[in-house]
Amino acid sequence: MSSSKARFDPAQASKFFTKHGHSGWLGLRYRAHGENWVELELPWREDLLGEEDRAVLASGPIVSLMDMASGMSIWTTKGDFTPIATLDLRVDYQRPAKECAAVIGRVECYRTTKSAAFVRGIAHDGDPDDPVAHVAGVFMTIDRDPRQGKVPMGQDAASSAGTGDE
Image (tube, rainbow, N blue to C red; front, side, top):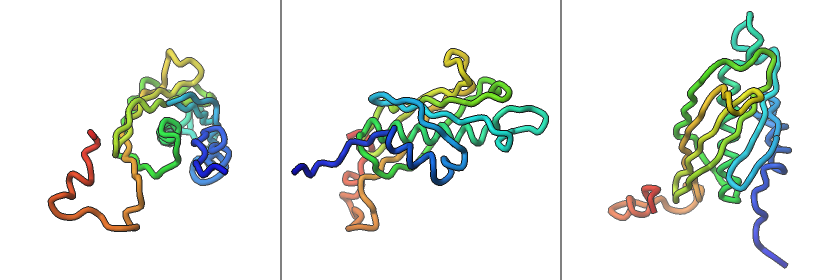
């Protein structure tokens, strides 16, 4: 009998994520994944428009798409579903999405340290060579619940907490 945990599987996890919470409300869909990347889709919906006179998805749902794809790429890279927090997610918009078009977000986790994970990716509406936006972000990885056990104090606190460069 094996006691090892199953590796995080974004295809399986998306069955939950895309049916519940904010991701579920947005209607995010799983598309594909690799060793360190995840691709999700935000379908076009009239209630997600940025402007009444243009049938273009608003920027807020696109940020949510990229944030979720970022988290899933981190869990995929680490192989484990552990708590993370978005510290910084920069979104550089290149152009509006095409009218009535879904937006696809593909994010890769290109580096992890003891306490951080770094991501980059693109959002596009059908042509990855003509992106709607580029994203880059850093997430804090949380290995344990700080409410459980003691939090480091005193002189050793800095070395125990880590800088992320270990």
